[in-house]
Length: 491
Ligand code: NAP
Image (cartoon, rainbow, N blue to C red; front, side):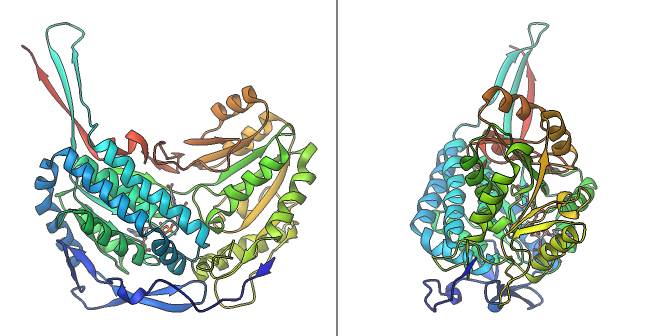
Protein backbone atom coordinates (compact mmCIF):
# COMPACT_ATOMS: atom_id res chain seq x y z
CA UNK A 1 0.00 0.00 0.00
CA UNK A 2 1.28 3.46 -0.94
CA UNK A 3 0.26 6.73 0.65
CA UNK A 4 0.08 9.87 -1.49
CA UNK A 5 1.22 13.17 0.02
CA UNK A 6 -1.34 15.99 -0.49
CA UNK A 7 -0.49 19.00 -2.64
CA UNK A 8 -2.29 22.33 -2.37
CA UNK A 9 -3.94 22.88 -5.74
CA UNK A 10 -7.67 22.62 -6.32
CA UNK A 11 -9.90 23.97 -9.04
CA UNK A 12 -13.04 23.99 -6.88
CA UNK A 13 -13.60 27.09 -4.80
CA UNK A 14 -16.21 25.80 -2.35
CA UNK A 15 -17.10 29.33 -1.27
CA UNK A 16 -18.74 29.94 -4.69
CA UNK A 17 -21.36 27.21 -4.08
CA UNK A 18 -24.67 28.32 -2.54
CA UNK A 19 -25.23 26.74 0.87
CA UNK A 20 -28.77 27.79 1.76
CA UNK A 21 -32.10 26.09 1.12
CA UNK A 22 -33.42 26.19 -2.43
CA UNK A 23 -37.17 26.77 -2.28
CA UNK A 24 -39.52 28.18 -4.95
CA UNK A 25 -36.63 29.05 -7.23
CA UNK A 26 -34.66 31.10 -4.67
CA UNK A 27 -31.94 30.52 -2.09
CA UNK A 28 -32.98 31.29 1.46
CA UNK A 29 -31.57 30.81 4.96
CA UNK A 30 -33.32 28.35 7.26
CA UNK A 31 -36.00 29.77 9.56
CA UNK A 32 -33.82 29.03 12.60
CA UNK A 33 -30.59 30.40 11.10
CA UNK A 34 -28.85 27.19 12.25
CA UNK A 35 -26.03 25.71 10.15
CA UNK A 36 -24.58 22.22 9.62
CA UNK A 37 -20.83 21.63 9.15
CA UNK A 38 -19.59 19.77 6.09
CA UNK A 39 -16.24 18.07 6.64
CA UNK A 40 -13.62 16.99 4.10
CA UNK A 41 -13.09 13.30 5.03
CA UNK A 42 -9.56 13.29 3.55
CA UNK A 43 -8.32 15.98 5.95
CA UNK A 44 -11.02 16.28 8.66
CA UNK A 45 -11.10 20.03 7.83
CA UNK A 46 -14.24 22.13 7.60
CA UNK A 47 -15.30 22.51 3.96
CA UNK A 48 -18.44 24.63 4.38
CA UNK A 49 -21.49 25.18 6.54
CA UNK A 50 -24.98 24.73 5.13
CA UNK A 51 -28.50 25.73 6.14
CA UNK A 52 -30.22 23.49 8.69
CA UNK A 53 -33.89 23.30 7.71
CA UNK A 54 -36.66 23.08 10.29
CA UNK A 55 -40.01 21.36 9.77
CA UNK A 56 -41.38 24.80 8.83
CA UNK A 57 -38.79 25.10 6.02
CA UNK A 58 -39.62 21.60 4.83
CA UNK A 59 -43.29 22.45 4.57
CA UNK A 60 -42.42 25.68 2.72
CA UNK A 61 -40.69 23.45 0.16
CA UNK A 62 -43.88 21.35 -0.09
CA UNK A 63 -45.85 24.60 -0.66
CA UNK A 64 -43.48 25.49 -3.49
CA UNK A 65 -43.58 22.04 -5.09
CA UNK A 66 -47.38 21.89 -4.80
CA UNK A 67 -47.75 25.35 -6.38
CA UNK A 68 -45.55 24.31 -9.31
CA UNK A 69 -47.01 20.82 -9.76
CA UNK A 70 -49.91 21.52 -12.09
CA UNK A 71 -47.95 23.78 -14.43
CA UNK A 72 -45.09 21.30 -14.70
CA UNK A 73 -47.40 18.35 -15.30
CA UNK A 74 -49.01 20.35 -18.14
CA UNK A 75 -45.66 21.25 -19.74
CA UNK A 76 -45.23 19.56 -23.11
CA UNK A 77 -43.16 16.37 -22.80
CA UNK A 78 -40.83 17.68 -25.51
CA UNK A 79 -40.12 20.78 -23.42
CA UNK A 80 -39.43 18.68 -20.33
CA UNK A 81 -37.12 16.54 -22.49
CA UNK A 82 -35.23 19.57 -23.77
CA UNK A 83 -34.63 20.88 -20.26
CA UNK A 84 -33.32 17.48 -19.15
CA UNK A 85 -31.09 17.22 -22.20
CA UNK A 86 -29.67 20.67 -21.47
CA UNK A 87 -29.02 19.58 -17.86
CA UNK A 88 -27.09 16.59 -19.24
CA UNK A 89 -24.97 18.86 -21.47
CA UNK A 90 -24.26 21.33 -18.66
CA UNK A 91 -23.29 18.54 -16.32
CA UNK A 92 -20.84 17.09 -18.84
CA UNK A 93 -19.38 20.58 -19.44
CA UNK A 94 -18.75 20.86 -15.69
CA UNK A 95 -17.68 17.24 -15.23
CA UNK A 96 -14.13 17.94 -13.98
CA UNK A 97 -15.32 20.55 -11.51
CA UNK A 98 -18.17 18.37 -10.23
CA UNK A 99 -15.90 15.34 -9.86
CA UNK A 100 -13.50 17.32 -7.71
CA UNK A 101 -16.36 18.67 -5.60
CA UNK A 102 -17.65 15.12 -5.02
CA UNK A 103 -14.15 13.98 -4.03
CA UNK A 104 -13.80 16.88 -1.61
CA UNK A 105 -17.01 16.25 0.31
CA UNK A 106 -17.30 12.48 -0.04
CA UNK A 107 -13.62 11.50 -0.11
CA UNK A 108 -13.87 9.10 -3.04
CA UNK A 109 -11.02 8.92 -5.53
CA UNK A 110 -11.23 11.40 -8.39
CA UNK A 111 -11.51 8.63 -11.00
CA UNK A 112 -14.52 7.20 -9.12
CA UNK A 113 -16.00 10.69 -8.83
CA UNK A 114 -15.58 11.26 -12.56
CA UNK A 115 -17.25 7.91 -13.23
CA UNK A 116 -20.10 8.99 -10.99
CA UNK A 117 -20.54 12.35 -12.73
CA UNK A 118 -20.84 10.68 -16.14
CA UNK A 119 -23.21 8.03 -14.76
CA UNK A 120 -25.27 10.71 -13.00
CA UNK A 121 -25.48 12.93 -16.09
CA UNK A 122 -26.67 9.98 -18.16
CA UNK A 123 -29.88 9.86 -16.09
CA UNK A 124 -30.72 13.33 -17.42
CA UNK A 125 -30.10 12.18 -20.99
CA UNK A 126 -31.89 8.85 -20.59
CA UNK A 127 -34.99 10.45 -19.05
CA UNK A 128 -34.95 13.26 -21.64
CA UNK A 129 -35.42 10.42 -24.12
CA UNK A 130 -38.07 8.73 -21.94
CA UNK A 131 -40.10 11.93 -21.30
CA UNK A 132 -41.59 11.75 -24.78
CA UNK A 133 -42.34 8.02 -24.53
CA UNK A 134 -44.89 7.82 -21.73
CA UNK A 135 -47.28 5.60 -23.61
CA UNK A 136 -50.65 4.29 -22.48
CA UNK A 137 -52.62 1.22 -23.51
CA UNK A 138 -55.95 0.62 -25.15
CA UNK A 139 -57.62 -2.76 -25.31
CA UNK A 140 -60.98 -4.46 -25.73
CA UNK A 141 -62.35 -5.97 -22.52
CA UNK A 142 -62.41 -9.80 -22.82
CA UNK A 143 -66.23 -9.80 -22.89
CA UNK A 144 -66.20 -7.58 -26.00
CA UNK A 145 -67.75 -4.14 -26.40
CA UNK A 146 -66.10 -2.27 -23.53
CA UNK A 147 -62.80 -0.53 -24.02
CA UNK A 148 -60.03 -0.32 -21.45
CA UNK A 149 -57.92 2.84 -21.72
CA UNK A 150 -54.86 3.20 -19.51
CA UNK A 151 -53.02 6.48 -19.23
CA UNK A 152 -49.88 7.15 -17.13
CA UNK A 153 -50.20 10.40 -15.19
CA UNK A 154 -47.62 12.09 -12.91
CA UNK A 155 -47.91 10.74 -9.38
CA UNK A 156 -47.57 14.26 -7.95
CA UNK A 157 -45.35 16.04 -5.46
CA UNK A 158 -42.39 13.76 -4.72
CA UNK A 159 -40.04 13.71 -1.74
CA UNK A 160 -36.59 12.40 -2.71
CA UNK A 161 -34.18 11.35 0.04
CA UNK A 162 -30.63 10.43 -0.96
CA UNK A 163 -27.45 9.05 0.70
CA UNK A 164 -23.89 10.39 0.67
CA UNK A 165 -22.17 7.56 -1.22
CA UNK A 166 -23.22 8.72 -4.71
CA UNK A 167 -24.20 12.34 -4.05
CA UNK A 168 -24.76 13.15 -7.73
CA UNK A 169 -26.04 9.88 -9.16
CA UNK A 170 -28.55 9.06 -6.43
CA UNK A 171 -30.04 12.54 -6.89
CA UNK A 172 -30.23 12.50 -10.70
CA UNK A 173 -31.55 8.90 -10.67
CA UNK A 174 -34.61 10.33 -8.89
CA UNK A 175 -34.87 13.93 -10.15
CA UNK A 176 -34.61 12.98 -13.84
CA UNK A 177 -37.50 10.46 -13.93
CA UNK A 178 -39.60 12.66 -11.62
CA UNK A 179 -39.24 15.63 -13.97
CA UNK A 180 -39.70 13.49 -17.08
CA UNK A 181 -42.95 12.11 -15.67
CA UNK A 182 -44.20 15.63 -14.86
CA UNK A 183 -43.69 15.65 -11.08
CA UNK A 184 -42.36 18.49 -8.96
CA UNK A 185 -40.05 17.45 -6.14
CA UNK A 186 -38.19 18.19 -2.94
CA UNK A 187 -34.71 16.71 -2.62
CA UNK A 188 -33.29 16.00 0.85
CA UNK A 189 -29.62 15.11 0.29
CA UNK A 190 -27.39 13.53 2.93
CA UNK A 191 -25.82 15.95 5.40
CA UNK A 192 -22.30 14.75 4.53
CA UNK A 193 -22.59 15.64 0.82
CA UNK A 194 -25.01 18.54 0.28
CA UNK A 195 -22.72 20.69 -1.91
CA UNK A 196 -23.08 18.36 -4.89
CA UNK A 197 -26.87 18.63 -4.57
CA UNK A 198 -26.64 22.43 -4.49
CA UNK A 199 -24.40 22.37 -7.57
CA UNK A 200 -26.91 20.12 -9.35
CA UNK A 201 -29.79 22.46 -8.63
CA UNK A 202 -27.83 25.33 -10.16
CA UNK A 203 -27.38 23.21 -13.28
CA UNK A 204 -31.09 22.42 -13.38
CA UNK A 205 -31.97 26.11 -13.06
CA UNK A 206 -29.55 27.02 -15.83
CA UNK A 207 -31.16 24.29 -17.95
CA UNK A 208 -34.55 25.97 -17.53
CA UNK A 209 -36.36 24.11 -14.74
CA UNK A 210 -39.11 26.52 -13.54
CA UNK A 211 -39.24 27.81 -9.96
CA UNK A 212 -40.73 25.38 -7.47
CA UNK A 213 -40.31 22.28 -9.66
CA UNK A 214 -37.10 21.24 -7.87
CA UNK A 215 -36.50 22.28 -4.25
CA UNK A 216 -33.61 21.27 -2.00
CA UNK A 217 -33.61 21.19 1.80
CA UNK A 218 -30.79 20.09 4.08
CA UNK A 219 -31.35 19.34 7.74
CA UNK A 220 -29.81 17.89 10.85
CA UNK A 221 -33.29 16.60 11.81
CA UNK A 222 -34.30 14.39 8.88
CA UNK A 223 -36.74 12.34 10.97
CA UNK A 224 -39.20 15.10 11.96
CA UNK A 225 -38.78 16.98 8.67
CA UNK A 226 -39.47 14.01 6.37
CA UNK A 227 -42.25 12.82 8.67
CA UNK A 228 -44.00 16.20 8.40
CA UNK A 229 -43.75 16.07 4.62
CA UNK A 230 -45.11 12.52 4.48
CA UNK A 231 -48.09 13.61 6.59
CA UNK A 232 -48.89 16.49 4.24
CA UNK A 233 -51.65 15.25 1.92
CA UNK A 234 -50.17 17.17 -1.03
CA UNK A 235 -47.16 14.83 -1.03
CA UNK A 236 -47.90 11.69 -3.08
CA UNK A 237 -44.53 9.99 -3.47
CA UNK A 238 -41.47 9.04 -1.44
CA UNK A 239 -38.39 7.87 -3.28
CA UNK A 240 -35.71 6.89 -0.79
CA UNK A 241 -32.18 5.57 -1.17
CA UNK A 242 -30.31 4.70 1.99
CA UNK A 243 -30.00 2.11 4.69
CA UNK A 244 -32.58 -0.61 5.27
CA UNK A 245 -33.01 0.57 8.88
CA UNK A 246 -34.07 4.09 7.83
CA UNK A 247 -36.07 2.65 4.93
CA UNK A 248 -38.16 0.54 7.31
CA UNK A 249 -38.80 3.58 9.47
CA UNK A 250 -39.90 5.67 6.48
CA UNK A 251 -42.20 2.92 5.20
CA UNK A 252 -43.94 3.09 8.59
CA UNK A 253 -44.19 6.89 8.34
CA UNK A 254 -45.48 6.69 4.77
CA UNK A 255 -48.20 4.22 5.73
CA UNK A 256 -50.25 6.85 7.60
CA UNK A 257 -51.08 8.70 4.39
CA UNK A 258 -50.57 5.65 2.12
CA UNK A 259 -47.79 7.37 0.18
CA UNK A 260 -46.48 5.67 -2.95
CA UNK A 261 -42.95 4.46 -2.03
CA UNK A 262 -39.87 3.45 -3.99
CA UNK A 263 -37.09 2.17 -1.75
CA UNK A 264 -33.46 1.50 -2.74
CA UNK A 265 -31.93 0.03 0.41
CA UNK A 266 -28.89 -1.85 1.65
CA UNK A 267 -27.10 -4.82 0.14
CA UNK A 268 -24.81 -7.70 1.08
CA UNK A 269 -23.64 -8.79 -2.34
CA UNK A 270 -22.05 -12.23 -2.76
CA UNK A 271 -19.28 -12.56 -5.36
CA UNK A 272 -19.11 -16.13 -6.69
CA UNK A 273 -16.07 -17.45 -8.55
CA UNK A 274 -16.28 -20.99 -9.94
CA UNK A 275 -13.21 -23.13 -10.64
CA UNK A 276 -13.71 -22.74 -14.39
CA UNK A 277 -13.70 -18.91 -14.29
CA UNK A 278 -11.14 -16.77 -16.08
CA UNK A 279 -9.12 -16.07 -12.94
CA UNK A 280 -7.59 -12.75 -14.01
CA UNK A 281 -10.95 -11.47 -15.24
CA UNK A 282 -12.52 -12.52 -11.92
CA UNK A 283 -9.84 -10.67 -9.94
CA UNK A 284 -10.28 -7.54 -12.09
CA UNK A 285 -14.06 -7.79 -11.64
CA UNK A 286 -13.59 -8.24 -7.90
CA UNK A 287 -11.52 -5.06 -7.72
CA UNK A 288 -14.34 -3.11 -9.40
CA UNK A 289 -17.15 -4.76 -7.44
CA UNK A 290 -15.29 -4.29 -4.14
CA UNK A 291 -13.28 -1.10 -4.54
CA UNK A 292 -15.43 1.25 -6.65
CA UNK A 293 -16.00 4.14 -4.22
CA UNK A 294 -13.57 2.52 -1.78
CA UNK A 295 -16.20 -0.12 -0.99
CA UNK A 296 -18.86 2.43 -0.07
CA UNK A 297 -21.50 1.22 -2.53
CA UNK A 298 -24.75 -0.64 -1.96
CA UNK A 299 -23.62 -2.88 -4.81
CA UNK A 300 -20.20 -3.52 -3.25
CA UNK A 301 -19.21 -7.18 -3.14
CA UNK A 302 -19.42 -8.00 0.56
CA UNK A 303 -18.85 -11.78 0.69
CA UNK A 304 -16.49 -13.54 -1.72
CA UNK A 305 -17.33 -17.21 -2.26
CA UNK A 306 -14.47 -18.84 -4.18
CA UNK A 307 -14.54 -22.47 -5.33
CA UNK A 308 -11.92 -24.45 -3.44
CA UNK A 309 -9.73 -25.37 -6.45
CA UNK A 310 -8.81 -21.75 -7.18
CA UNK A 311 -9.27 -20.27 -3.70
CA UNK A 312 -5.61 -19.61 -2.91
CA UNK A 313 -4.70 -18.38 -6.39
CA UNK A 314 -7.62 -15.93 -6.32
CA UNK A 315 -6.89 -14.79 -2.76
CA UNK A 316 -3.22 -14.01 -3.46
CA UNK A 317 -3.89 -12.23 -6.76
CA UNK A 318 -6.61 -10.10 -5.13
CA UNK A 319 -4.41 -9.33 -2.12
CA UNK A 320 -1.57 -8.20 -4.42
CA UNK A 321 -3.89 -5.78 -6.24
CA UNK A 322 -5.40 -4.46 -3.02
CA UNK A 323 -1.95 -3.94 -1.49
CA UNK A 324 -0.83 -1.96 -4.54
CA UNK A 325 -3.63 0.61 -4.28
CA UNK A 326 -2.55 4.22 -3.71
CA UNK A 327 -4.29 5.71 -0.69
CA UNK A 328 -4.64 9.45 -0.44
CA UNK A 329 -6.88 12.52 -0.47
CA UNK A 330 -9.77 11.70 -2.77
CA UNK A 331 -9.36 14.79 -4.96
CA UNK A 332 -5.76 13.94 -5.94
CA UNK A 333 -5.52 12.41 -9.41
CA UNK A 334 -3.00 9.81 -8.19
CA UNK A 335 -5.32 8.41 -5.50
CA UNK A 336 -6.91 5.02 -6.13
CA UNK A 337 -8.60 4.73 -2.73
CA UNK A 338 -9.76 7.68 -0.64
CA UNK A 339 -10.92 7.77 2.97
CA UNK A 340 -14.25 6.56 4.31
CA UNK A 341 -16.89 9.24 4.57
CA UNK A 342 -16.66 9.86 8.31
CA UNK A 343 -15.22 8.60 11.56
CA UNK A 344 -18.26 6.45 12.35
CA UNK A 345 -17.94 4.58 9.04
CA UNK A 346 -14.19 4.06 9.52
CA UNK A 347 -14.74 2.77 13.05
CA UNK A 348 -17.50 0.42 11.89
CA UNK A 349 -15.17 -1.11 9.28
CA UNK A 350 -12.42 -1.46 11.90
CA UNK A 351 -14.84 -3.14 14.32
CA UNK A 352 -15.97 -5.62 11.61
CA UNK A 353 -12.38 -6.59 10.80
CA UNK A 354 -11.45 -6.88 14.49
CA UNK A 355 -14.51 -9.10 15.05
CA UNK A 356 -13.55 -11.37 12.12
CA UNK A 357 -9.94 -11.60 13.29
CA UNK A 358 -11.03 -12.40 16.85
CA UNK A 359 -12.93 -15.35 15.31
CA UNK A 360 -9.81 -16.61 13.51
CA UNK A 361 -9.58 -14.62 10.26
CA UNK A 362 -6.14 -13.77 8.81
CA UNK A 363 -5.35 -10.62 6.83
CA UNK A 364 -3.42 -11.28 3.60
CA UNK A 365 -3.07 -7.52 3.35
CA UNK A 366 -4.33 -4.53 5.38
CA UNK A 367 -6.34 -5.00 8.55
CA UNK A 368 -6.09 -1.62 10.26
CA UNK A 369 -6.88 2.11 9.95
CA UNK A 370 -4.22 4.35 8.45
CA UNK A 371 -2.21 6.42 10.91
CA UNK A 372 -2.83 9.91 9.43
CA UNK A 373 -5.51 12.60 9.36
CA UNK A 374 -8.63 11.56 7.48
CA UNK A 375 -10.86 8.52 7.83
CA UNK A 376 -8.63 6.04 6.02
CA UNK A 377 -8.70 2.26 6.32
CA UNK A 378 -6.23 0.00 4.55
CA UNK A 379 -7.54 -2.11 1.64
CA UNK A 380 -7.88 -5.48 3.32
CA UNK A 381 -8.24 -9.12 2.23
CA UNK A 382 -9.29 -11.66 4.86
CA UNK A 383 -9.20 -15.46 4.68
CA UNK A 384 -10.20 -18.13 7.23
CA UNK A 385 -13.32 -16.08 7.94
CA UNK A 386 -15.64 -17.84 10.42
CA UNK A 387 -19.27 -18.17 9.25
CA UNK A 388 -20.60 -16.15 12.19
CA UNK A 389 -18.32 -13.16 11.52
CA UNK A 390 -20.38 -9.97 11.45
CA UNK A 391 -18.98 -8.80 8.12
CA UNK A 392 -20.49 -11.79 6.30
CA UNK A 393 -23.97 -10.76 7.45
CA UNK A 394 -23.96 -6.95 7.41
CA UNK A 395 -22.82 -4.36 4.89
CA UNK A 396 -19.11 -3.64 5.42
CA UNK A 397 -19.25 -0.43 3.35
CA UNK A 398 -15.49 -0.21 3.23
CA UNK A 399 -12.36 -1.56 1.50
CA UNK A 400 -12.47 -5.04 3.03
CA UNK A 401 -12.87 -8.33 1.12
CA UNK A 402 -13.80 -11.41 3.15
CA UNK A 403 -13.04 -14.66 1.27
CA UNK A 404 -14.77 -17.99 1.95
CA UNK A 405 -14.20 -21.25 0.01
CA UNK A 406 -17.09 -23.35 -1.33
CA UNK A 407 -17.40 -26.80 -2.92
CA UNK A 408 -20.62 -27.16 -4.90
CA UNK A 409 -23.07 -25.05 -6.88
CA UNK A 410 -25.89 -25.91 -4.48
CA UNK A 411 -23.79 -24.93 -1.45
CA UNK A 412 -22.86 -21.54 -2.83
CA UNK A 413 -26.41 -20.71 -3.86
CA UNK A 414 -27.64 -21.58 -0.37
CA UNK A 415 -24.90 -19.43 1.20
CA UNK A 416 -25.60 -16.54 -1.17
CA UNK A 417 -29.35 -16.55 -0.58
CA UNK A 418 -29.01 -16.80 3.22
CA UNK A 419 -29.32 -13.04 3.70
CA UNK A 420 -32.11 -10.58 4.37
CA UNK A 421 -30.67 -8.55 1.46
CA UNK A 422 -31.13 -9.24 -2.24
CA UNK A 423 -29.69 -6.35 -4.21
CA UNK A 424 -27.02 -7.80 -6.48
CA UNK A 425 -24.88 -10.94 -6.92
CA UNK A 426 -21.75 -11.41 -9.00
CA UNK A 427 -20.98 -14.69 -10.77
CA UNK A 428 -17.79 -15.68 -12.60
CA UNK A 429 -17.69 -18.83 -14.72
CA UNK A 430 -16.71 -19.68 -18.30
CA UNK A 431 -19.72 -22.01 -18.56
CA UNK A 432 -22.53 -19.77 -19.79
CA UNK A 433 -25.26 -22.35 -19.12
CA UNK A 434 -24.08 -22.66 -15.52
CA UNK A 435 -23.83 -18.89 -15.21
CA UNK A 436 -27.41 -18.39 -16.37
CA UNK A 437 -28.70 -21.30 -14.26
CA UNK A 438 -27.03 -19.90 -11.14
CA UNK A 439 -28.22 -16.36 -11.96
CA UNK A 440 -31.82 -17.56 -12.07
CA UNK A 441 -31.51 -19.27 -8.69
CA UNK A 442 -29.97 -16.29 -6.89
CA UNK A 443 -32.52 -14.29 -4.93
CA UNK A 444 -31.57 -10.76 -5.91
CA UNK A 445 -32.84 -7.97 -8.11
CA UNK A 446 -29.66 -7.94 -10.20
CA UNK A 447 -26.91 -10.36 -11.22
CA UNK A 448 -23.59 -9.42 -12.81
CA UNK A 449 -22.44 -12.39 -14.88
CA UNK A 450 -18.70 -12.17 -15.63
CA UNK A 451 -18.89 -8.44 -14.87
CA UNK A 452 -17.92 -6.36 -11.84
CA UNK A 453 -20.47 -3.62 -12.44
CA UNK A 454 -24.23 -3.56 -13.02
CA UNK A 455 -25.12 0.14 -12.88
CA UNK A 456 -26.54 1.52 -16.14
CA UNK A 457 -29.20 4.24 -16.53
CA UNK A 458 -30.91 2.11 -19.17
CA UNK A 459 -31.25 -0.91 -16.84
CA UNK A 460 -33.74 -1.49 -13.99
CA UNK A 461 -31.73 -1.13 -10.78
CA UNK A 462 -33.19 -2.46 -7.53
CA UNK A 463 -33.41 -5.26 -5.05
CA UNK A 464 -35.53 -8.05 -3.65
CA UNK A 465 -36.17 -8.84 0.03
CA UNK A 466 -35.02 -6.08 2.36
CA UNK A 467 -32.93 -4.39 -0.33
CA UNK A 468 -35.91 -2.47 -1.55
CA UNK A 469 -39.14 -1.97 -3.43
CA UNK A 470 -39.30 -0.75 -7.02
CA UNK A 471 -36.69 -0.03 -9.66
CA UNK A 472 -34.68 3.00 -10.75
CA UNK A 473 -33.35 3.56 -14.25
CA UNK A 474 -34.78 2.19 -17.51
CA UNK A 475 -38.47 2.75 -18.35
CA UNK A 476 -39.28 1.14 -14.98
CA UNK A 477 -37.80 4.17 -13.18
CA UNK A 478 -40.14 6.50 -15.06
CA UNK A 479 -43.22 4.45 -14.19
CA UNK A 480 -42.31 4.77 -10.48
CA UNK A 481 -43.29 8.45 -10.82
CA UNK A 482 -46.62 7.79 -12.54
CA UNK A 483 -50.04 6.46 -11.61
CA UNK A 484 -51.94 4.28 -14.07
CA UNK A 485 -55.29 5.94 -14.78
CA UNK A 486 -57.85 3.46 -16.14
CA UNK A 487 -60.72 4.91 -18.14
CA UNK A 488 -63.59 2.49 -18.79
CA UNK A 489 -65.40 3.43 -21.93
CA UNK A 490 -67.39 2.27 -24.88
CA UNK A 491 -68.20 3.65 -28.29
P1 NAP B 1 -28.96 6.48 5.73
O1 NAP B 1 -28.35 6.74 7.04
O2 NAP B 1 -30.16 5.60 5.66
O3 NAP B 1 -29.30 7.93 5.13
C1 NAP B 1 -29.88 8.08 3.84
C2 NAP B 1 -30.65 9.38 3.82
O4 NAP B 1 -31.72 9.29 4.75
C3 NAP B 1 -29.83 10.61 4.21
O5 NAP B 1 -30.28 11.70 3.46
C4 NAP B 1 -30.18 10.77 5.68
O6 NAP B 1 -30.04 12.08 6.14
C5 NAP B 1 -31.65 10.38 5.65
N1 NAP B 1 -32.17 9.96 6.95
C6 NAP B 1 -31.50 9.46 8.00
N2 NAP B 1 -32.34 9.20 9.02
C7 NAP B 1 -33.57 9.56 8.60
C8 NAP B 1 -34.86 9.55 9.18
N3 NAP B 1 -35.06 9.13 10.42
N4 NAP B 1 -35.90 9.99 8.46
C9 NAP B 1 -35.71 10.44 7.20
N5 NAP B 1 -34.54 10.48 6.59
C10 NAP B 1 -33.46 10.04 7.27
O7 NAP B 1 -27.95 5.87 4.69
P2 NAP B 1 -26.49 6.37 4.35
O8 NAP B 1 -25.60 5.95 5.45
O9 NAP B 1 -26.51 7.81 3.96
O10 NAP B 1 -26.18 5.56 3.01
C11 NAP B 1 -25.68 4.28 3.02
C12 NAP B 1 -26.81 3.27 2.81
O11 NAP B 1 -27.47 3.55 1.60
C13 NAP B 1 -26.28 1.87 2.69
O12 NAP B 1 -27.07 0.99 3.42
C14 NAP B 1 -26.40 1.59 1.20
O13 NAP B 1 -26.50 0.23 0.88
C15 NAP B 1 -27.62 2.35 0.85
N6 NAP B 1 -27.66 2.64 -0.59
C16 NAP B 1 -28.52 1.93 -1.36
C17 NAP B 1 -28.55 2.16 -2.72
C18 NAP B 1 -29.49 1.38 -3.61
O14 NAP B 1 -29.68 1.80 -4.74
N7 NAP B 1 -30.07 0.29 -3.17
C19 NAP B 1 -27.70 3.10 -3.30
C20 NAP B 1 -26.83 3.80 -2.48
C21 NAP B 1 -26.83 3.56 -1.11
P3 NAP B 1 -28.72 12.51 6.98
O15 NAP B 1 -27.59 12.41 6.05
O16 NAP B 1 -28.99 13.91 7.39
O17 NAP B 1 -28.60 11.55 8.13
